[in-house]
Length: 182
Image (cartoon, rainbow, N blue to C red; front, side):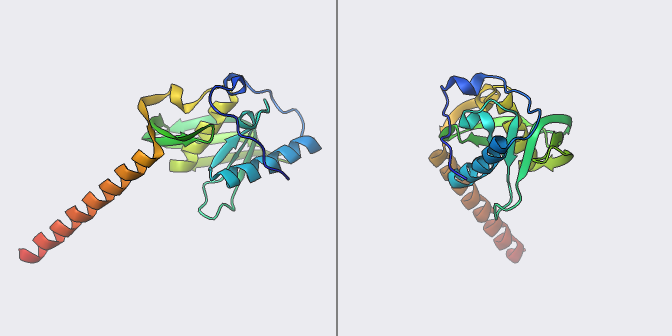
């Protein structure tokens, strides 16, 4: 297993459609392992084969806090969606930036696992977002094409989140104080 270089925005491979995987070969098994290692090392929750320069329809996703519950999707298709969520999204191919993207709240994905056994996964919230984001890469799409507003630096996003938390704590503190005075 090895770490692979993550392709950045501007690399033409990120705009191309990926090819179907007809059978799992030892080289593709190695690719899956390398993609997992690369995703974990980079601190991401998902990675698509085009992001490491391979135009195959393979995606890895792991949204678990311990990074020990990976989904391996070969030739994935989104077969059902519902609801809507809007939130900040980032990408290992555009490091240090985030943008607001609208995605389904729930998705059902049909794919093959690394043994080419058909699997069906359901995801909500972050998992649904990650499935959609990574499958978009297989069709040459970046989240920036669906973004509402402008890209922001992740440092600005962290500051905004800290400010929102402080305001929520202050509001809660004020509310508690009001509760005690009534």
